[in-house]
Image 1 (spheres, rainbow, N blue to C red):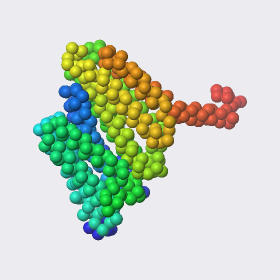
Image 2 (image 1 turned 135 degrees about the horizontal axis):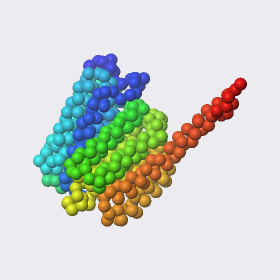
Image 3 (image 1 turned 120 degrees about the vertical axis):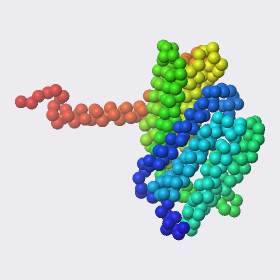
Image 4 (image 1 turned 45 degrees about the horizontal axis):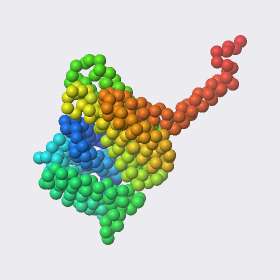
Amino acid sequence: MRKSSAGRLLRKRESSRQASSLELFFDLTFIFALMRLSSRLVSDPSWLTVAQTLVLLGGIWWIWIATAWSTDWFDPNESLIQRLVVAVMFVGLLMSAAVTQAFGAHGIYFAGGYVLIHLGRAAVLLPALRGHRLQRRTLLVAVWFAVSAVPWLVGAFLPAGPRLVAWIVALSIDFTAAYLGWPVPTLGRVAYEQLRVVGDHLSERYGQISLVSLGELILATGAAYVSGPFDVPRTGLVAVAFVNAVVLWRIYFLPEKQNFGRAIDSRGPRLAVFAAYTQLLFIAGVVCIAVGDEISIGRTAEQEGHGWGAGFFIAGATLVLAGRVAFETANGARPWGTLLAIIVILALTPALLRLPPVVALAATTLVLAVIAFTSPGRRQAARQWWQEKTQKLRGRTSSGGAPGSTTG
């Protein structure tokens, strides 16, 4: 492909910064993936299952991140990119289906799908970018995915314990290489300018995938509710769970997030990569809360595993707040209020674990609500709103007299 043809694949910086329908279509696979991850934890709540599920979530998340960056660098309206994203979507669907038995008989389907997506993307883009300077970027990224492919694939044929270790090593390679700019001996690392993304576009994509995770939370809560009687205790628990979902929505879309895109543009790719890690904390937290909802609503106190509900509520709230601490710190803020909220939850943990899960859900929801509705950004927005209203009122008074007065 000639250089001019390769250039047509690239997304122009002046093009629309809104997410395309293709990107939103791709997110649908992520809903199914989150549902499978939640189901895995609900069916077998244990520390080992938690560790395994976190690794699986990390792998699925890295596929979403790589695709989000690809559709920022390349034009999603180009037919080659569309075919590539749809192919990733299909393989991701198969990976998600393999989640339940990923540490059993279906390990090769999950690991093989992960490797196929990342190396297959490179196999398509490298020849398409022949003669273009950005071909080197794709090559360097592919080298590191080829390195991590070894523990991914080898681990797929090991017993569950060694497989977990191998896949943790593989994920560590992928996450670390991205943060460092995919450095390769003798070839160097990806140039800073070649890692640039459009801040508004990536910020919008992060917001959309957060809504997707909250959608899975609502689905999990509703599915658990319809599985049993519509009695007062279960209905009350669903009401608290719904309030929790609303608070999570508010806490993610605080006014500070409006400047996130500009922050990425001004501070560069390093912040964009770091934001991917902080976003993962939020997604993991929402998954934990969804699992807590399913366990607490779908099981009686006498059933095995019911007590895990409180633990998942506590872990979920802590992860969400930890992601916010990381986000605030990366933007140069001092997250003292959010840190205090984490300390409060941890201090309450011993007592909450001894009480019914609904108490843990209500307590953590209250702490999250304090952050959501009293954050500095929220207070600043409220002050700005009040000042605008006051100025309008003064303008009416000076031009036409006091409100309600008549002339004649």
